[in-house]
Length: 67
Ligand code: 9UX
Image 1 (tube, rainbow, N blue to C red):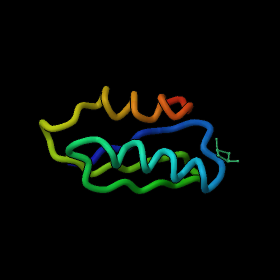
Image 2: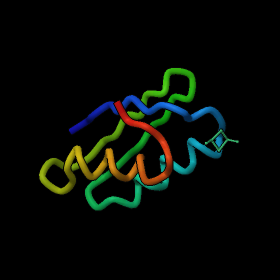
Image 3: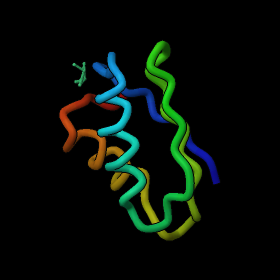
């Protein structure tokens, strides 16, 4: 399964690492691709192992807003 999160406020490489790390730590998340320009974060995950809400919270916990 793949999902795209629209994340606001990521502007540098450290933001990218923070978001990637937080999502990557979730059980069931297999891959995370971040586009700083567009704010889009593509997450590849195993269905049933992780919820949309968990992904959203992981990003929000790093201090970014998710649309
Ligand atoms: Mo870079 Mo991101 O200085 O919140 S870490 S903009």
